[in-house]
Image 1: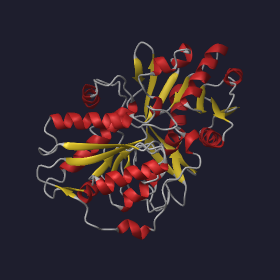
Image 2 (image 1 turned 90 degrees about the vertical axis):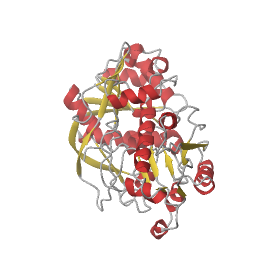
Image 3 (image 1 turned 45 degrees about the horizontal axis):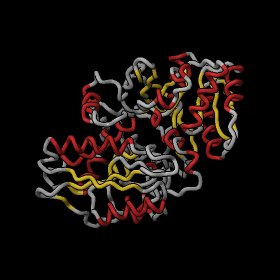
Image 4 (image 1 turned 135 degrees about the vertical axis):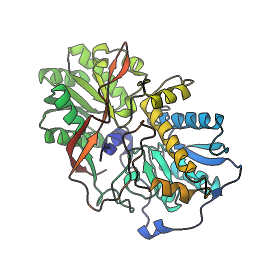
Length: 428
């Protein structure tokens, strides 16, 4: 097994807004066995897919649009080259507004009214309609696991895979598991020994900070915890203590704006670290603007993930992505993962040439048990159903560092940057 398990990290991307949200009503397991005949798209008719995105949400207008934009660009390029077996892919978009009500409305529109064959690159702040998608047996391919839906329901296939039973309850008895590979990497490759974890005095932020602290301690780090007031954060005091404690690494459980303020405070007090570690959502070309006031901290930014660096244009699959998205004003890792999700659906649909492109046929492709890499863009992704959670796992990760004159620079090959690490439990 060589895939990261970043569900907790993805949850942290919007931790300040997910508190108290639902992931859809849970249906009895028997409800997932509905074998009603799904719509079939044959002949020369377009193959219809849906993309649900929280394009407008409390998090901000562009926070979730990367996967959508990458998937759209892939399908546009695919259609310009003849589509799938001569049939174009018709993309139906739906903005759920970042709410559970809006998400259910999008699911109803796309699944019940538009009769899409599949959903692709779902990126929803509150995936309340997940159980309805699963009950309708609509494959949801390559979605971002912001909540636990992709470790809860069958027929949902997040971009990073899952080993959970997915029978209607999250993970194993409500617990998800993640590895310590990020912390192992910085310990072995960069010699880090002391890590600071910065959070707000807000429940979701503090909970994620506790998880990061637990994982760091499991790897033998000395951990310095810094908590700031959510309403009036004093990042300068936190940064000063980070410097005083001699932290090698800084992790955080704060939002994007808070990150920028933290970085500026670190520059102001002269705090120098090996790495200010961020996540895949912030792996973007907008770093110079986002961190314009903190050049030292900006050049200490590192990102980790499960997909090949979008800057690695020496790789043919990345080069294809960049060529297909050259019309976009910015680039990001989430765009690349949306592109990979669209390719995943396309490969599934191409496998249905003999039977016709149906929901069941696409779903069968997804359930083959064969690891998928989207031509090398992803670490091998698989969906299996383990009755018990793994205690340890060999996991790999993609690592990049920001340099002002070069952008995001890959640190080694993601397929060989691998570690055997413990799997620690947490509740989503």
